[in-house]
Length: 207
Image (cartoon, rainbow, N blue to C red; front, side, top):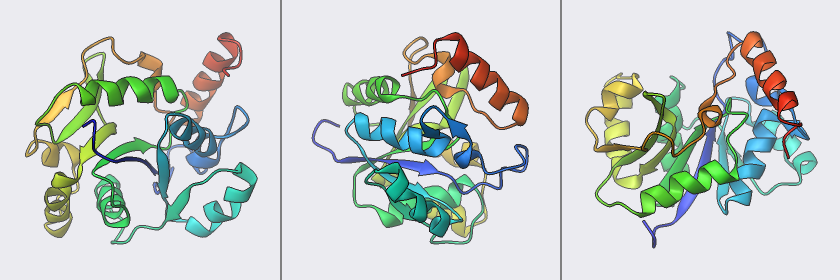
């Protein structure tokens, strides 16, 4: 992957029904879940595309973030991560997309770097996905552009389960211990948000 271009894609189009408010806009460190994740991707040397169902609201925030980030709505009917991945491929030209969910408060430049360097050391994969404590993380993964037709087919045929489509691809998982377990912690509920805040406080408030 050394010579291939890469971009980070953050999926922020979910309904946040379990959280009760937009997860991407939750206060975190110096900004929000989304703005801090964009900053970490930029610090890792990646341009960033945000896929959101409310692009106008997020576009208005870019000036406040003082970050160079593109925002796009779903370019196809919104059906969850599958439509987000299809949109990401249609809206970019890079060969490799680092797809991240917006609710990863502890994902940072160091973890992103580890994932990318691991992928650079191997060949022949379609997807390199984080696997931590035995659990696959399809929304913390690198996707090769050659997988786009597979995702387009899944969308066309109404197959919206990520794991079902991943079964058709050559998925390489990270070795246990490569990524910190907190890097893939998802804050999907108010309780998990409070857990993240408590963890942040316990380690000294982050960066």
